Image 1 (cartoon, rainbow, N blue to C red):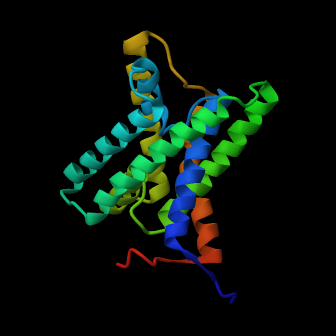
Image 2 (image 1 turned 30 degrees about the vertical axis):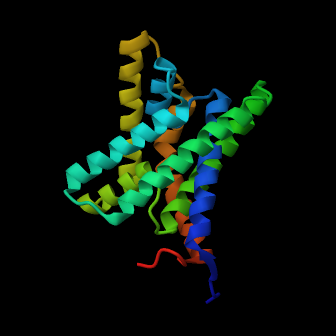
Length: 217
């Protein structure tokens, strides 16, 4: 059996944050429909633009963490660090959104943005989960809640993504009478992201052993 290479969990966490943020920004840039989990903060950012996309994303993440604590009636020290990780992601998302703003917007480029963004997102989230460190609140929510109720991550992730899309549609229709950022790409991501992330998790774990240096258990 081939020996696995060692990868620092902290490096996997950093890679996950950057890949995830770039993936979300690229998918948004594609105009095919934002990611399912990003649907709610994006809708809020367009409906109430006083706050940036990244800021609304962070508020969304904080709300998820509070909901997780209420549902499980548990508070872990990892949750505190997750708030910091969520802030770093929100900053990276605003930065990536700004940088991609100047990229071409023709249909061929948009198709590439969507495919590349989806892959980066899946790989990034897989790194975050495999790091076994405090991860971004929305991913920590699905990971810990799936463990709490005893249902597989990919099923909980899929149900969570679909719920985000539905809530976003309701808010948009009530606030501005039309959908915001929702497209065929949104529905597609809601159905495949959970399975794609699970696939890349398995691929990474067959190649690398994740070990932490600064956050020993």
